[in-house]
Amino acid sequence: MDTAKDARVLVVEDALRRLNDVIGNRKLKTHLDYSKLNELLKTAGALLYEVKYSYVESASLADLDPTVNLVAAIKELFGLVNESIKSKSYSPTSKGEKLALAEAAYSSRIVTGFQRRLKEFDEDPGYAIDILAVEISALAPVQGSNNLTECRCTDGSRIWTIVTNIKGLKPQTKLSCAILPPSDMMGVVSEAMFLGSTPLPESTNLGQLSTPPDSALDQARAQVMQITKRMI
Image (cartoon, rainbow, N blue to C red):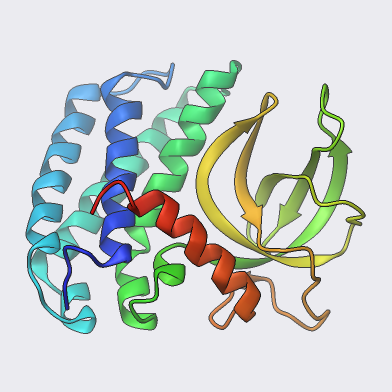
C-alpha cells in the first residue's frame, strides 16, 4: 500500500498540523502544560513520519508500533486538555476560542479513530473521515444570514452543531453527515456537513455509517480530496 498517498494517513497528517496550530499558538485560554503538550505533538509527528513511509498494508499498518504509539500520544494529549477544561470549568467565550476547541476535538477524533478506519475500510478517500447518521433536534436561523440554518443534531452519543444552507429541514429528520474540520459560518462554529438533503430511512441507527449511501460517500470523498490535495 502506498501509505504516503493514502487519504487516511494524509487526513491524520492534516489533523496533527491543526493540533500544532492550536497548541503551538496557545489558542485555548485555560491553564495547560503547553511544554508537555508540545512534547506529545513532537513525538506524534515523528511517529507519523514512520507510519507514512512504512508502505505496509492497512491491516498491518493499524497494528504497527508507530501507529499504536501515535494514537496513544494524541489520546494522552486530548485527555490533558479535557482534564484542564473540566477542572477549570473552562467555557470558550470568543469565536476564536470556540473554533480552536472545535479544531482540537476534531483533530483528536481523527487521530484516535485512525486504527479503526484502517481496519474497517478500504483506501477509498471517502472513508478517511467519519460519516455519521444524525438526527436533527433543533433548528434556528443564523443571525445576519438570509440562507443559513444552525442545526443541533445528535448521533446518539453527543450533540453536533451543523450550519447548512439546505432548505426545508425539520426536527427528527435523519441525515448523513461528514465530520470535517470546523469552520466559522457567520459567527457559528459548524462541526460537520450534511451529505445531501435526502433523509435516511427512519430505521437507520444513529452513529457511524459503515455503508453510507453512494451519494453521501461521493460528497465525503470530495471533501477529503479538498483536505489532502495540498499535502501530496
